[in-house]
Length: 268
Image 1 (cartoon, rainbow, N blue to C red):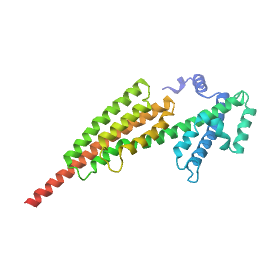
Image 2 (cartoon, one colour):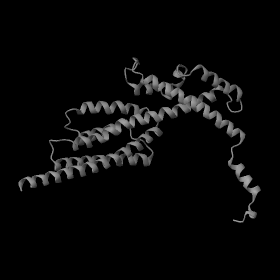
Image 3 (tube, one colour):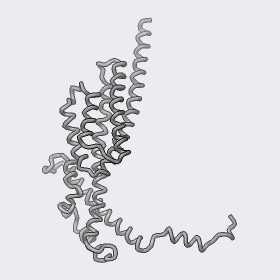
Image 4 (cartoon, rainbow, N blue to C red):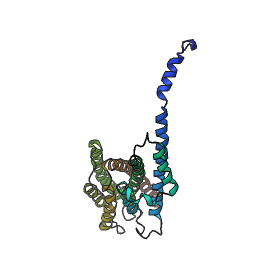
């Protein structure tokens, strides 16, 4: 490009179009302050819920966080808002009437930011537990010493068929943007148990059912958008489970080949 052909005026106009206006810069700065306060409030809620000395919830930290959901924000927020932050919020309202026409506007922004942190945490916790249940059968089947290699592989394949049906159900729900109901998810997890863990003496069907139901109660209280986000994560867990099944199947086959070679060696 010939430097003498550079249109400096046009470049300035384009740069200004991309730059934030003073008002936008101000709004973004205030939004960051409110967002940081909301994050601090959520972290205090989480610390309170995870405190081993919290006798109110007796170790049920997820139920505690669930009880501190955004719908109840106005009820509990003052318990977790320190004096300096309260003064800061009051100052923001008083000094920025062009941004916050009323205290309610600032309060709603604080509540909205809190809901983001709350949702991300809840989704992550539910996914971690339910995701572990999806892969539990894979490890259980592959590690059973009383089953020979062919039986293990057959059981893994049977489980894979059921898991693939579950995957398709989630895929359809995501495509239609209609999350699976709690009852449908519960049915799928019961099917997964019957396909993979039906003879587990350490985790019977009732215990599995109670665990699944406990966590799906929290799923049920999420808004649809968050339910869909959680289903995306479960979908990825299923893909990971398929990868784990392939890996364990290869290990089983290798162990079987090693066993056969040792038998042949001993016979010779």
